[in-house]
Length: 290
Image (cartoon, rainbow, N blue to C red; front, side, top):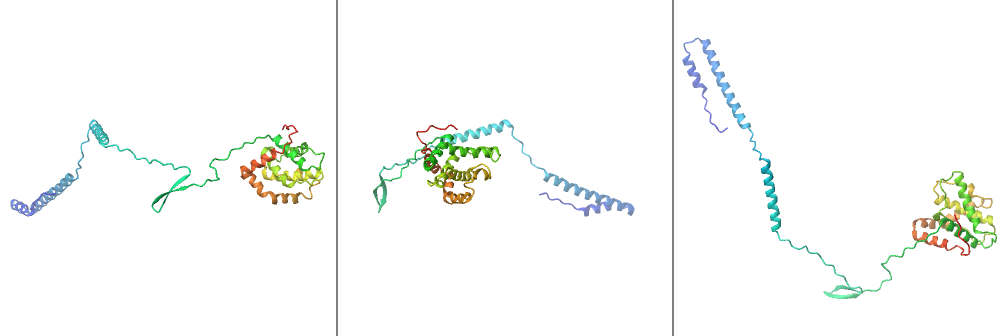
């Protein structure tokens, strides 16, 4: 602990033995033991006191809250003064240069040359948006007029017959519980028109043959565009097409599979087919209410 201690138990032992030389041996032994115990206890107490002094911790006295707040405010004030003394330089902003419309500058061999732009055929202006509106009844009448015009040999055929075939099948599926909502919508009528364009030709000789082919197209349209997983065959099969139903279906699928996918994926192609169907309307006939 930095303190020099000098303990000589031998000399103390001799003095004790001289002072009590007249006593008996037993008494001398007890006194010796008693003094030796005193010396040992004194040494333990000295070591314990030194350990307590070294174990004391220094606890700093905390500053009062008012003084702490004052010091914080002084630090903030000095910080603001330092920031105000700094010169505020303007932030450099690059100024874009706009080249001329018909010329570009190109560096060639260390010299600045001017290259004339060639006129481009591509316009940066987006194409104009075309909005086509038509009701379901109007599109059904357009579909009927198209079939009447295509099958010109059938003199007694009118567009109302085609619409009636379509509505009867849709109503039968609703009544029998094969579908929860009607299938006839403008988008689905456009899809049926796409199939009829390829499947129905001018060589049709009877209305029964036309009805069989038309209902085959309807079955494919229901299977592809319908909300249900599957549909029954009975409403779509007639006596005229039951022998060639699947053959006609496979032929239409092989020829129009790409266009069927494109009609749902490409809005421009759908608009073209939609506009083509709307143009099939006979101007001499009045519109059909749904």
